[in-house]
Length: 137
Image (cartoon, one colour):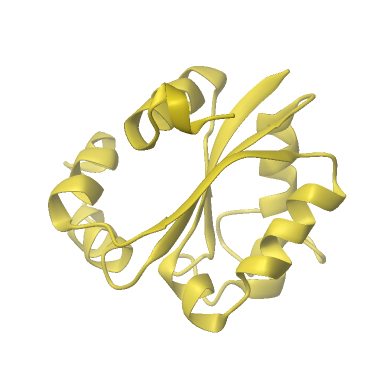
């Protein structure tokens, strides 16, 4: 049973589509093992996206991720990471397949509704970054 991390980003939270996104996960065989709504500060968002620190979009990414609350989830199921990535769709919502989360709820490549782990190793690290062992059930 795999676990992966998903973040419903500030743009989707502001639109009030948390429930619709969670329904996509659950309707496609992913179980919610942990979930919380938080307001990230610049330090926490900066640490989470540190891999992008030297890229030109880093500052804007941190600013966006701190612009409003986010919902952070641990998703669990068979092939959870790949399934979540399929459900999210392409990073650029204009290129995302019809019916994916980003095609349906994202505004732009920057405000693209959701984050999902891109490997099992990153998923494990990202889950530990946001959740204690006791919070993941």
